[in-house]
Image 1: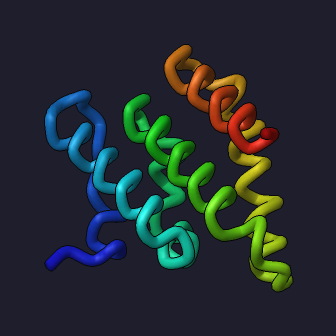
Image 2 (image 1 turned 135 degrees about the vertical axis):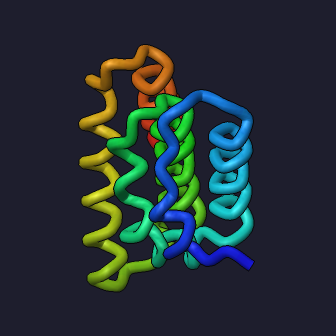
Image 3 (image 1 turned 45 degrees about the vertical axis):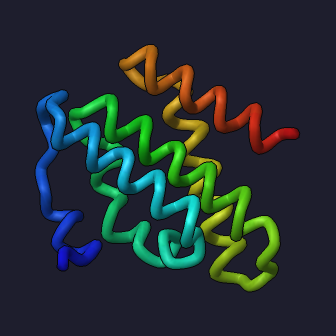
Length: 114
């Protein structure tokens, strides 16, 4: 079984099938276990600035899922810090080089604003 620490070391540069499956896996995990995904974010942060627009977009969706399904309901100081950090990441991705990632960032912000 692969752990999040093993996955965080994977370098995903190409837009191939592995990258798309990995992105789908991250999104699925964030939907089912947002609290655990929030804990693993420190291991997955490097993918937010990765070369692959597919992974950057998936990481934005992961962030949106953890905010909407976990962080807004938890008032603990670590959760508040995570919430601020995640909003900063979403804000910075609005000016991403890829139009696909910019659109996903705006879509997530719009979803969270509702």
